[in-house]
Image 1 (tube, rainbow, N blue to C red):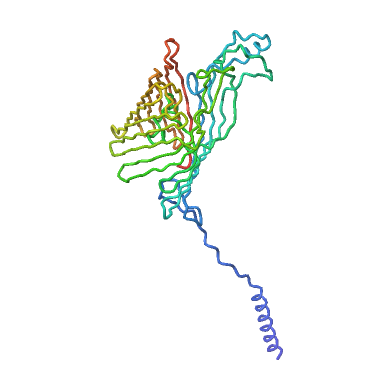
Image 2: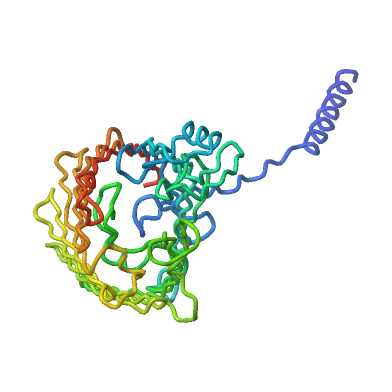
Length: 407
């Protein structure tokens, strides 16, 4: 009887414990499905779908460091600071010396490109923001001193300095072939800029950043056509063009001042052999025209060549300004090309000449040391401004180090 009671009691105890544990059981929830980033190859390398959407996004850019010496885009004939200080102290600016120094620029460029398909075509949002730290020239005031500079030759310019600044280089939206925003002028982009050198356009081939409303038609058979309405901008020294009671005068001489925009129209064709394109630009501020045509030729797999020429309407009517033709004289000519002589190295050449006897030659080698890191040494020769002076010609050197990311 005792054994039977013990067995029954043990069984009851086990049932009770089991029931208690069942009440306390932890229920593990099913894991939520993880949505991995999907590659979007519709628009090229580097795009991926934003999770939860059908929008494809690409984030890319570069870090660039430029060093220039001699006659480049850098600092030429800046005022010697110690000499300027002595001139201030002695109130004697007759023998103020100038010297040269390096041009340097560090730039971080961030690009964002978002695209999606709609019933009206591809919707695109694109922006590029440049974060720059540059050497520059500044006014001649030094060490807090404000001397009387009435006798100073304004051609001396200023003193060397450095500055941080941020630029929205591009920021626009596109739907189908329509574009609205800020970007480079259609007059420069429709014909494909000029060449692959770092200092392109020493002989200017067109303007750059501007507000723009444009439409580009792509026929699908190599034929393209387009039109753009632009606001224009461009600061220029106009001291020698107008009579003023002061020295240097700078003005934004191309931004529109009425509701009539600048207008650009272009036609182009691209085939296996190369391409041909042309643009016409109308400057509504100064009521002048400019035209430019270009031919590209694929000489062989590793060699491409181009020739480009421009003409403007205003050389004979006394108006010195034209937004779309900022070269000297009636006409200008550019030629050059690229030669990919190894998998890592490409040589680039650009030659420019205009009707005012300005001449430039720029040659470089773009060497990809490792994937996405480029070393680009460059040599520049210029002979400028219709001068009979033997010293009018000049040489410059330029080195660019650039690391790209994002494809």
